[in-house]
Image 1 (cartoon, rainbow, N blue to C red):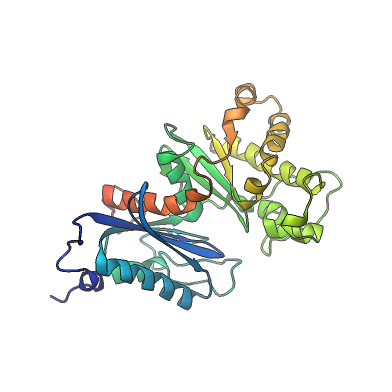
Image 2 (image 1 turned 45 degrees about the horizontal axis):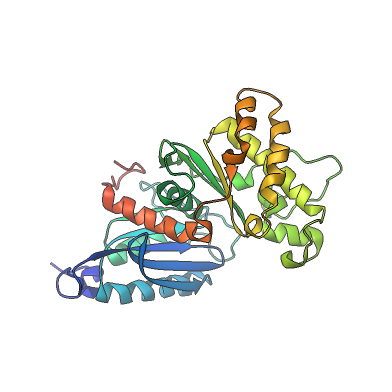
Length: 326
């Protein structure tokens, strides 16, 4: 029987030089990729940072990194956290392909199946933000919880939703960053999203803020009125999340809030009035300081998220004919 590509790359049979198995995580973002070789989340052996270019050259760079690791290590599982939208239903012929995206040239790109064919090791793929949410549950600010949401605001806006310890998937995956929110009186700016105009991403992403103000992000003062607009839109988004998926905690990360830590208190102050005293509003108001917080893993949530997926691939059996992990 012809050996697989992954077997051909491995030294000897499947034994690593020091006899210890490894996992590989790939965080495929809109502007950069982080590939990580590790034995565990706190035993990182090597990290490669690559630019996200066109699909062909980007995937070739990822494969070059993994090929090198395969030659010297016993890589036992692969986790892929990708920007979206991406098809996650394993029964679909387009499983692992990128959907209609704002990133030029990537619509239809085969990310996951290509890597699975090449390496033939247990593999789980999810959105990059879902992966980050899983990492926060394993090692970060959502430890011990059953349900939580990880929201990232940067080049885009994404939300990883975990319910009962599992990321939410159904007819696609959550794209909460593209929900439409109520606009504040007097604000009629058209928004920056090419699909929806003034959805959350179109109002509060880094590029949207720069386009609205006409300034680079670093040049915008902390007291600029745009931050009130950003806080209003995100508070409305949080209101919607609390009344739909009822998370025990919302983690707000990404480049925009991490560089402007005053945003989380601003959002908290706007969130309570939006609840209007309805349902669990009093309970929510009483715990806002711990309900809406920064991620515990900071910028490491993304790379660690891909490792969390790789660990899940080792720890679970995957029914390859469905999207169900069993």
